[in-house]
Image 1: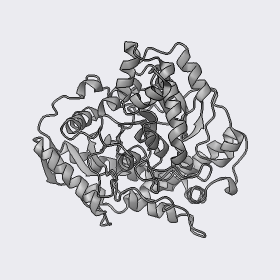
Image 2: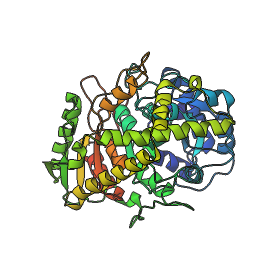
Image 3: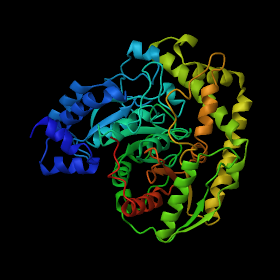
Length: 479
């Protein structure tokens, strides 16, 4: 079979199906790898999603012995953000590191687990610089574009990963989420995006799992999400936040009966902002679908989400993370970065953080703890899931979140209006999933978000697979 034929025949298969072709002997890892490389070279010129390419390294991996993991031989992409891969470079979307090309001297814990899955990693996908915005338009690499409409963003910060999966370059790609960065691009690109529980997957040995960000992947199917979560979940040495292990494999939850659930519906901005009519239509359609499956859906949501002081609490920590990130980038290349080497919005965030005192930071941490406990109480009071739009608007046009002359925070303010529903659950640490259940009249995917109690990815996977079976999306592909 020719590489062209394999590339076409496997393009829309999920990672589980591709792994089955390898396990059965119908295809070799090297054949799947060449097919994925061919698709990237053919398709990515219009999208700019794969910004660092390791094709020769991938060919070496695919032709040698691979770990006998659940995704042996499946092509894979790593995000260009805080995911060290021994022997390769990572820039975190920054121009100075792009130029210097520092080489990682060790894997992160998660990257080692991805290797043990048997994935063949082809390179890195685009991220905004330091993952700060919900669009993927780093100055170092130029914008990444949405396969459904290349004038629009694929979201961020895992926008390169989502664009590559949605376009059929690879079936699954690494993603991370500090304020919605798995769920936002999943919504924009018509994919499944699960943000795991805080402490479900180790951030070791370089980052702390006690912060806002968690990691997993974007996929086309719920079963892929469940299987990769099984493969990479669990603590590592020195972790301080550790979610209780599941009672059985997450893959066993796919197709399992979730029972009749009590689901709260939030179909408006909880703090009075504007929500696009397409996002309202999407979440109300999902509510109807869930009711048709036997669940009880009622208008209700945690009162904590209406607290207008939530955003400044979140941004205090976001700014502190940015300042810390810029310092880490400097340490990587052995000198401090200058304002000319950091994008204006990120430099402004770091400057804001430097104006905060240690007491201010401690107060922000305490405020987020208060928010977390108040939010969790809603589930404790008898609700099983919360249903919301994933985003406040359809995918934005390229450039809408740019900084403006004299106003570096203009893009961040625009971004805040775009993503009112995702950041709260990074602060609360709860698992949340975006599902592609709706397309608007322009043919753009509009995701809906389901949020479960802390540690209940099992319930999210059961319901997500129930919705996938009843209202399948696999045949919806961008032209």
